[in-house]
Length: 342
Image (cartoon, rainbow, N blue to C red; front, side, top):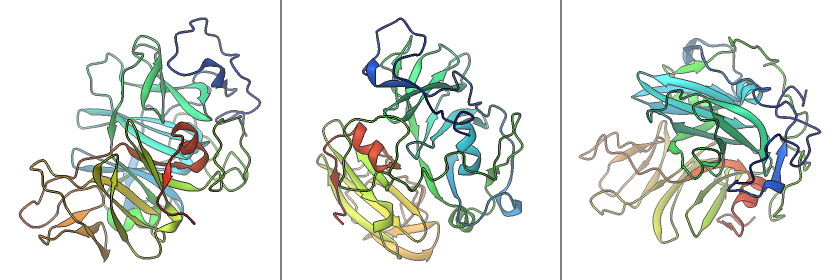
């Protein structure tokens, strides 16, 4: 199963590359085993209405995006086997990637004039994390660094799109008319089985990772935010059974973290609006997808949009934040501060 998915039994530096010009330490790059495109990306995704699907169980996780006013959800049970979905909504092309070894899901806008906007799985890993390659230039991209680390586009940074990762039952309650990725793929995998055994809950790693931080269980899911000089993480399981907002600062920048452990839901946004207003946000209970309100009585939904009041339609600024397993976040961002210290 491992050889059919991210890899297993790979080795350090045995990939075919004679160019030493990498932005990341070459001796920390591992060959996962299957080789380039050995894990097939989904390039012609097929969807059905979320309210009609029976494909996903309520407690399973999905990754959701909002592009051009349309919501798409991608079940983990498919992403575990393919890792990359190349999608287009209207004319906006984007790539959604999920690395099952680090539990990190990210989406990038790729409507940048490239001849081929598709991305594939390179078969390489950095700190156990997926390295993508773009099919326009062959450049390699570190998923969690969100940057091209080798090739013609070396140094280029990805244009992140907000994603919301949550349970299927929570997503369905928020967006029943959204579209959900089906298991109807060109290369079908065992979508009723998980390819990594007990990996999600045990302490084992398949590949050596430096900077291991034992303050948390290595597979603890955190939502983290990072800037050029600071990093902070919030455990998903520590928000509690009711929605909580944390008005915080990271590297001097005002942010809000909203989360609910029972809903398996969390997001981080800037609290500062374009006009300089800094919001103080409080939680709203039981009104999904609305999760927050401010002192003006304006309500905000989980993708950061104001849905009522004089600011209706305004969106909170996205931050460089995403969910990942603790060991991976700590490896990429050393000396991360934790909000919840239990």
